[in-house]
Length: 376
Ligand code: 5AD
Image (cartoon, rainbow, N blue to C red; front, side, top):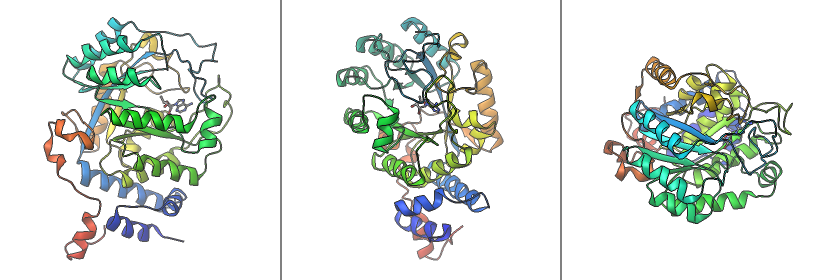
């Protein structure tokens, strides 16, 4: 049985973790060992990215969705949900408020809603890009021609989670589609030059430490520039109602291991993590995360974007959310980034060029070899 120490020793020399080692780390118990893992991830985050935390403002512009994902509260079959669509003008006006508040990234998120044509969303992207911010789009699986147009309109990033790397589980959870198809979309987006964001849910029914290890390895092999890792939270209006939610502890371990394997990726302390525990986002920021995503959806719509129940931040005004996030960041002795927070593969476009100097994960190993630093 490998020990945490042995795994760390090997990791700092190679930058790698085997599937078996990841499974071992995921099975660490809450007896001090787990806390050590989270601390090591915090250290890797600091060494590679410093103490800046990036704030992203999300606008959830439509809760219509053609998909029927078994876990999701806005799935097509949930007839109880009141549906809304923001007009392009409303979306652009909300983005302008975000920019006025100082956000450097606006995330445009929705269900898979084909009411918005490719050109409609391209126009929205163009209008938001004129405000001088980075734009992330998260509008699901669309024809490649839409992705092309949106990129041409200036979209910088795309967020499309793979949710689970277990093909059979993916199939059960996502009727009528497949993991292969999802991965094809991700490859397309990468080819088109998007900064690529993806990620998973932790605690899905049927998931095991082995499949979670595969999730983390998949994130690494996709060279994600952003990975969203959140606990699964059963929604009462879905077929998964009554199943167990993902735990904060397992989510933090997945986050920490993802940080070890992706030392320079942007990893948010997710809203879902903040929903499973009041201290979830703080704990995430101390276990490898370096991003907070704040919900700027107008309050009249926000409670309707109920992908999971009891979503945090459902009633808080944007200015207050931002103030609370800043307070959290400062209380950890960290700073709010003033840059765009682009992905590490796209830093030529980043104002902060100091981060562009490569710092491989084996720095500590080299230092140890020269006798200047021991393992800490
Ligand atoms: N619990 C947790 N996360 C969920 N998502 C959707 N439904 C749930 C749920 N019940 C997440 C998925 C999706 C993102 C927008 O929200 O990971 O990609």
